Every structure is written in structure tokens, then in C-alpha cells.
Length: 163
View 1 (cartoon, helix red, strand yellow):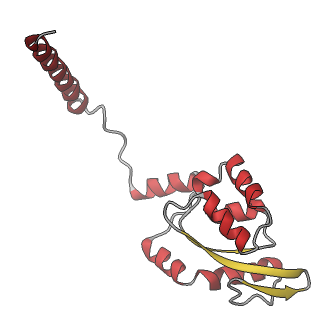
View 2: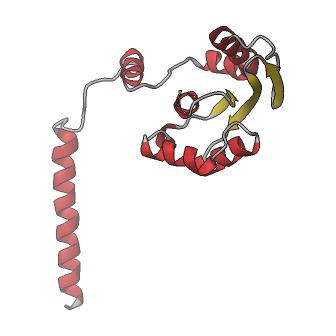
View 3: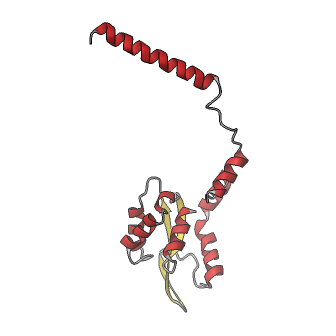
């Protein structure tokens, strides 16, 4: 191939691309239905995501352990748990360990399970990680602070971390 042939081939590719782009953008084929905030919120909620306003997020991030501990108390009658961040509390059902897990951006499931095992929330880090991967929870882990206890099942832990 000589220089003139390559220049002709390059010009043809650029010309063809310009024609396709003109039809694509000129005909409106790329324009989908207008997505409003309400429609986007409804679509995300249908897919199982929790949608909140930025103000709500800030409020929840400021007081996650108080709200979560109250919910645990109501749901499981764990009256001794108050501000039990990372400490053992004796109850009728044995020892309960409560821990506030801070999930950060780009944190892997392996890192999360190692922290949970270190804090004695789970006994088997590899088992919980396998559960998360098998049930596709590892792809949906959310960023934020989560209060977890050692009496939660793998499913409850996974649901907590993904909602």
C-alpha cells in the first residue's frame, strides 16, 4: 500500500462515519423517552434500590447507629443494646456483638467479610463471601454506615449491606 491509497482509505472511513453520525443524530434515533426524576426514582425502587434525597442521606449518615440500634431492639427484644458499637452485650440469648461497618467507595466483598470476621460478626469469612457471590449480593453493596450484629443471618447481613 502506498501513501495515496492509505489517505483515500482514511478519507472514506471518515466520510462514512460522518454520514452515519448525521443520520443517527439528525433523525432523533438516539433520543429515548424523557426520564423525569419521579420516573427514575420509581424505576430504581422497582429494581430494589433505596432512593433518598440528599438531605435524608446526610441525616441518616449523621445518626446511623442510634436509628439502627432502636430497630434492632424493637425487632429482636435486645433491650441491653445501647450504643453498643463494637462491644459485647449480655442478653438472655447469649452474647450479642454490635458493630457499625463503614463501607467506602471501591471496597471489595473480601475486605468487608474480613472486617466482619475480625469484629466477630461472622464466624466464616470465606463462607459469607461465597454466599454474597452466589446470590449476586456482592455486586450491589452500597456505600455508607451499617449497624450489624453477630446474631444476623447471612441473608440479613447481605440485605443490610445492599439496601
